[in-house]
Length: 520
Image 1 (cartoon, one colour):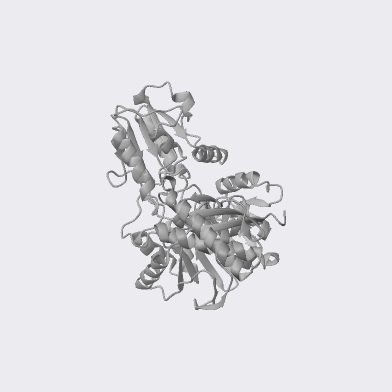
Image 2 (cartoon, rainbow, N blue to C red):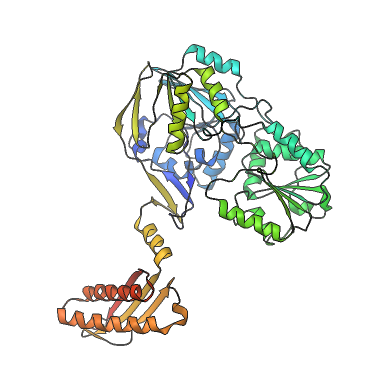
């Protein structure tokens, strides 16, 4: 298996933070699973490991920095002593007979991004992982064009390739160029400088430390995930050339023009450092007019509203904001078409298999590969099992179980569980609880109602009165039908739901609790 990642909850999954792939197909064959080979340490490539590894129970292979990130996840999950975690050298190899994996460093927006050259019985498979081309990388030394061309000369059956930026015509750009741009942009600023970026982008953090040094400022990091990345990067041998990195408590006494802070929260996350700073909830740092906030990141689709709230709050406090749309302060970690073209010219696979994107990205990538003389392409959907031969022919040979699991509180369940469906309905339509006491098929007392999420109910007794009448009428129906206690609850539920619908147009979830005093 290559990588085992997760994504994050969306609006249609209320109460859900983490989403995982359904591992059942692989778990059914776990005795044949030789290992999990990890390309890099982003959450969408390693995030599901502590949750799903118990279903797989296989060794894990990763380079040093990535292994450090995985190790911390395993510690938090109490799994470290159960998992065989094997560190692979940069550019190293892993033999899992009959497969042989060779790690090929490629630039990305995290340390130790790697492609995998996989020797199989039918030939070589080149799995790009997440990648870009960078002629001025800040950390690490990506595989050269000459080395990739040599791989192509030796013959590649299939290239499994990143499709994320296939609609971008230009190359993604260099981290070194971002650093130079930030130095020019930030020198001469008179107030505090706050830079929000992705915590995992250690190269960007290295750049910001150098920017601070070049502009006569002390460098500070804020946010637990950012501090973790810095710590693990140091353990893996990176950041040795940087001056001391301070925490905000140490630096709070410094003059405003001597402070450059890198912090989490570039996507508007409400609990991240930047949101707490912007809304005045951080104990160690308050912003003043004339301070500058730089979003050294892109907006991930779906986060526009949360980021917009941040922009507006900062603007209301007279804090200047710079984004990638205003200045050159960010580059992507994925290849545009210019980079994809070079990769296909170097590697020259017989078959292109687009991955890592939505269907529109995969289809566009397949068309692009054909335009650059790749003989065959195959777009595969989740759950489709594909067979490849030595000539690059690819056929869908089976449809296996696939789907999504979610972390609901502390429980891993399917994304279509009844609890999530009810939560979604409650969020849209509201909830009504009805409590009734019955003795000898008569109401003992007035019913008690609990209304949640029903419009205008707080100041209107009419709905309560109407629902009381609906319960009384439901009881008359119940007595005439001579039905049992369970049916009384259902008759009341239908009557109350109809009354609420007629009153305000909502169709809430209605739960009825019936206490029959004859039964005690």
